[in-house]
Image (cartoon, rainbow, N blue to C red; front, side):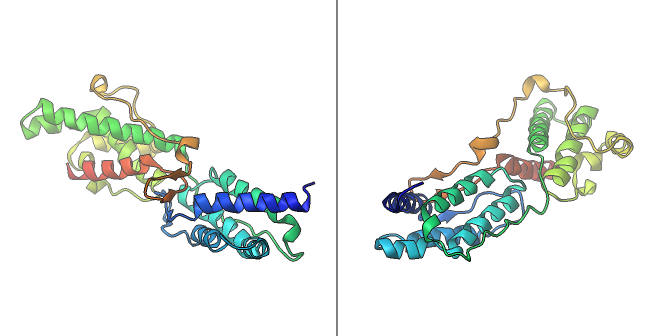
Length: 268
């Protein structure tokens, strides 16, 4: 068990680290969920700023509060809403553990630990990564068709081959529903407006469920490179920028790729 002087030292170190990392302007991450505001994460930053440069007793009174614990738990829920999962829980749990270690003897008997809100829906990151790769193949194949042929009829024939229509189904239909939580409108998808093969793809999807992975090969596999994505721990780090802004939480690059792919394939 830590002595009183040790606990005060831990508290000072924790507050110093928290102030350095959190007191900079909070920069909301790119989210796959609909959340756009992070009031609890911002409140935790604000408390860290307000509690800096105080006397020992003032620091304890400022930092070791129900308000800050509530902000940590609320921030945990906000990141769940952002990434539609709990892979960021461990980061906030560490904040809370460090806070408990430092503030334990100074907390009132009535302090309670609230429950973090759950994500409104869950996301299969592996499936979305596969879908994003299909979007990359589709985009490269569309470019190759346009480069290989001049006449509109030949370009349409190239883009309407079954493998590309299947990729469009994976990218635009599965990607929209599984990763973005939206219903795709097939009349807005080029392949489903212009290709007879799309009818067969839709019929097959109704019989055996929606396609969830790209075909093993496409007509232009030799010309298409793999898409590099950031997932897991590499996508959920806290990084400091030279401007002093703290970027906390995940950078889900595939959602940007999917949105761009949907816009591209619906217009071409």
